[in-house]
Image (cartoon, rainbow, N blue to C red; front, side, top):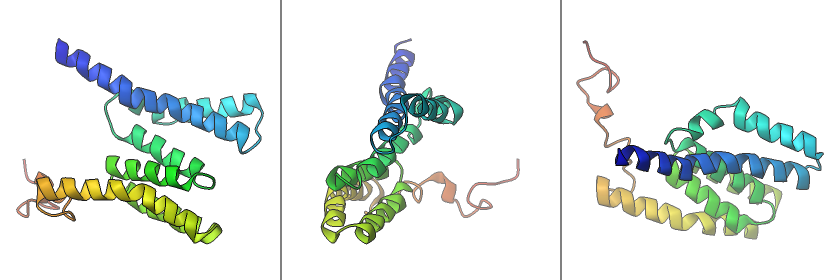
Length: 167
């Protein structure tokens, strides 16, 4: 079936590639920034990819793996490439709303540990994604502040907690 083939190709292209890149980024970060030996960096990478939920989530089409890659890149790039870190944090937030809090936290950490200029560069990198996300919400949900979660069927007041009902 062509739709199953398309689903597998998209899953491999997005989640599978993101999961593999998490291991590569961790290896390079361990070697270059932390000064780890190659065997140690390989072990950390393999344990992270195969010893956590990264690999299982890489085999199904879920946004968690690309989001994790974007946040990891944001942390890795934060000290030396704040603009790229901001872009990466913006992409993570566009994938999964909760990452907006992490993006703000990273900008605050950068501001407190470095200069306000680096924090501003990080914010400039993330800003276009915030605008695009706001435009998307305005178009589909009627307000830039109303999210898909608020417009979901899980907000039915007749159900307990918006979800539960008697069988």
